[in-house]
Image (cartoon, one colour):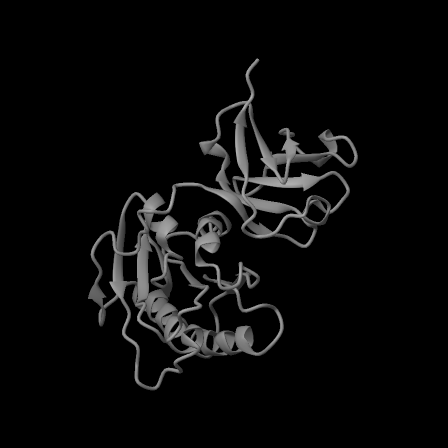
Length: 245
């Protein structure tokens, strides 16, 4: 499969043009629109979201990830093999957490042809690279990257802030549940958030956090829009508190 993870949005021509490149070359290969509302212009927030929502990818699959405010600039175009799954995207930190969490990884610099649009590498660089990687299984015309070039060593392993808000107003944090000690409560915008297992376990109108289906700590309200009620946005800090008996 090919998975698409972008900030292109669901309107306009961009997603359709990427699909056209992929389906023209690989008409029988499923192309999965994983998400096209990743945090716009925010590669750091998207970097913590990407490994969680792309967890369905299996060895041999390709994930095309594009959150690329520096398109056409000095940043490189990259291909990353992380435990057998290929990722293609800009070298702006977007692939950093995928690489950091992989048991084994290899990274390569993708060539950019003179015919590629300076402002649409998703269509003209990353989509053709995805086709090549899915059919060939390797990078041939690319230069290896230093092992840690994709990483951002100043970025933490988990990001204590809101990285995505879904259509229900639920707010994903950049925190993996496995990184939180048992009994941890969260606080956002002066509101303390206890942990509940699921929505129905929380009293109506109560703000809480839970372990979402992607393994991230997510903030919600039972039957209401948490983002609007609590005034949350991508980038809102999240504070951690260890409950002491």
